[in-house]
Length: 349
Ligand code: NAD
Ligand code: DAU
Image 1 (cartoon, rainbow, N blue to C red):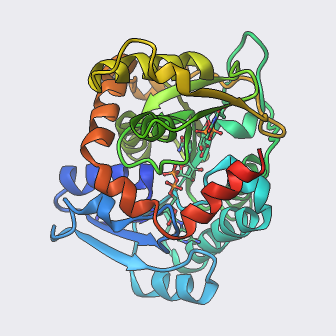
Image 2: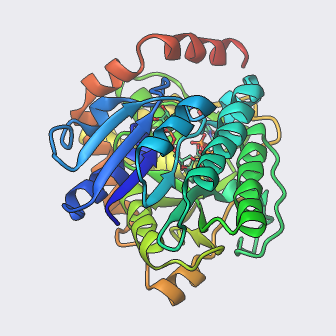
């Protein structure tokens, strides 16, 4: 592949995907298309900024004229589509912006690919999605690629809609597509509104640690660089029209993970054992809160040979160290519009 369009490359996962591809494929040009919402920050990509096989385009995936012009001008061999509104709590407060970006934005990109990719034999539209489309599990069982869709939040419903559009473009127009559905990512550069970076930042500043409900919801955590590697493998070896689940085989109850963070950070911050855990505050539950997510990533492992590379304890340690060393990044990305949202959150609880 000579030219790849990555949408949402200035966000958390997108920046790791861009970094991996720019460094690994010197003969491939990576175009990062991002509108730079509160969640998109070019600081995430400072280390690749000057590389000759990387360029950034500021633009909105919902802007049909702009996207059409981009596809007419550039001959992309592949699209890796990550741009989205990604935070469940925000989708509860402002569902329409999720429908706009995640559903309309995906449709605009698919349609541009349909119109401007005349010869599709060497093209690929890779849609990056989430395990939340499958809904919620009980105490046992796993999501597989054939689990029926059952989304509950405006975020997951918008991602489910976008997945269906991708499949519809494959079935109807023969557009070459592939989809992956991944579990919760963690690592550096994640916007500090999501569970792990929010808790790390609040522990540092001795602020309350807001645990929703009883803290007994379960999530499966995956090191973000392992997700980026999985995307690389699927892009190059995945079968057209297929879905691949990506997960860490690493389930944690929210409360357990917060206690683990507190224990590790007490040591790193030279605090007395148990001091950070005193900050844990149980708050009103998230409406429609999915109980448990757990991904069965066997297909990806058996068919394409991918598996997670990093133990959770090691990944968490690296993640905490990154946030401790990058206080300026946190201050910079949490200035402006985010501050307003953040204080509203607490008023409503
Ligand atoms: P993020 O919120 O950190 O980044 C999203 C990026 O998209 C930002 O850079 C933002 O500026 C950009 N963007 C938003 N609206 C745009 C628009 N209209 N036009 C152009 N760019 C726009 O999200 P993330 O956590 O990195 O997630 C990336 C993708 O992976 C999303 O599609 C998400 O649904 C999916 N996903 C995330 C996780 C996770 O744990 N974070 C897990 C599975 C799947
Ligand atoms: O499963 C994949 C999904 O993981 C992605 O598709 C989403 O983009 C991503 O945001 C993430 O969604 P979650 O809702 O699982 O992530 P979040 O970090 O918001 O919350 C993780 C769990 O922690 C969830 O059960 C809610 C809980 N939580 C979250 C926050 C922010 C709290 O208890 N307190 C909090 O302050």
